[in-house]
Length: 176
Image (cartoon, rainbow, N blue to C red):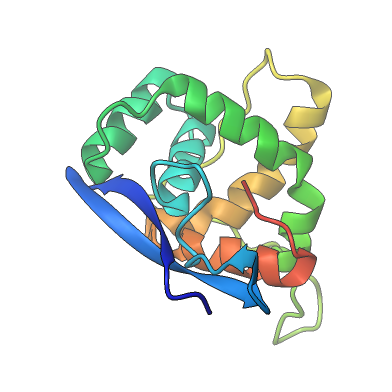
């Protein structure tokens, strides 16, 4: 490890946070930076903020409303609806990998009769997926899978960190 660390600025709950990340060395040559699971390179907010905003949009809120509610909940001023759009597009491209990392509950073996039972992705009282008519066919097919993968963020938004970590461990690439 190098003595010097790479410092990144983040915003969360209206606070500027500096994250000091160690630099890996190969001899004297830097070869990588060790990032915590919540930090994305060149991103201003933790990973769970982006995932939560996408989940709000998939649950029927407009992108502007989802961005406003995300900004208020996590204290991240300047969070934009265009950020949700870009994040959603990136996640839609990785939906197969996400479902492999986090299998849907309906695909897990069930106890009892042995018959496959469909388990709802959300608990009673939680929002459900709203499919929009203007979406492309590929987005309409991928949205239920993405919603099921992200549904746990309603009860614990920070669980998005674990999802990003598991994705990185399995594929060696960042989620976003």
